[in-house]
Amino acid sequence: MTMLPTPASERVGPAFSVDGMLTARNKTRQAIADVAAQIRPGMVEEDAVQLAKQTLIDSGMALSWHPTRVRFGANTMKPMRQPSEPGVVLGEHDIFFLDIAPRLDAWEGDGGKSFTVGANEDHARCARDAEALFHDVRGVWQREGLSGQALYAYADRQARALGWELNFDLPGHRVSDFPHAAIHTGSLADLQTRPSEMRWILEIHLRDPQGRFGAFFEDMLLGNEHYV
Image 1 (cartoon, rainbow, N blue to C red):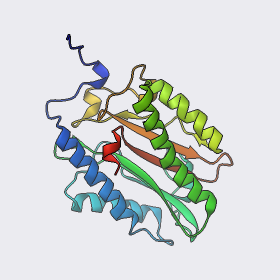
Image 2: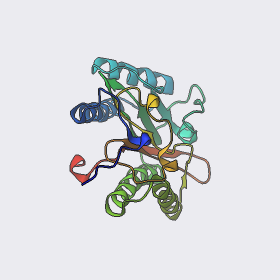
Image 3: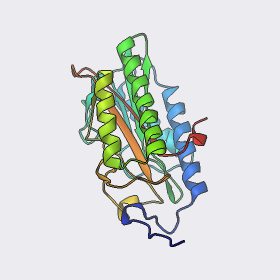
C-alpha cells in the first residue's frame, strides 16, 4: 500500500515523541488541577497568574510559547490576545479559568479548564458546557472524520443551541515538539482536512451573550482511552 506524504500542516520536529507529548499533557493537566485547588475568593488575578507560573516551574516545566493565563470574572469574556483588566478580585460566587502552555524538555503542553466558586448556576453551567462541548466535538471528530473547518462550524451551532456564543478568536492550533510555530502556524478552524490525533489542540471558549462571563476548555485531540 502506498503511504501518502504527511501534510505540511501535520509535520513534526526531530524531537517528537508520543511518550513525551503524553507526559507533557499529563503534567499540564495536573498543574491546572494544582493551581485551581489553591485559588480562593478574595484573590487578585495577578497573584493567581504568579501562582500558576511558580507551580509550573516547581513541577519541572518551562514557561513556554504563550503567556500563562488565569482569568477571573468579567475577564473570562476577553479574547486571549487581549490583556485582562488589572486588579480583578475573585468574588464569592464567581468563575475563573486557566490557560497554560508549558514545555517539558522538548515537548509542548497546552491545556485550559474553567472552575467556579460559590453558587452561581449560570457560571456552573457555562463551565460544564465548555468541557462537554469539547468532548462533543471530539466525538464527532472520531466518528465522522470531519475537517477542522467542519468541526468548528459544528461547535458554533452547538454553542448557540446551548445559549452561548463561541469565540472564534480561539480557533485551535498545532502542538508538537517545541516550537510548533516553526512547523505550522495555521488554526484548526481553517484546516480543510481531518486533523490527526496528537497534532492539534481543540479550543472551546464560550461566552455569555449578555457579556458577563465566559468559560474555556482545551486539550489535545485524542481518543477516548486518554479520558478515563
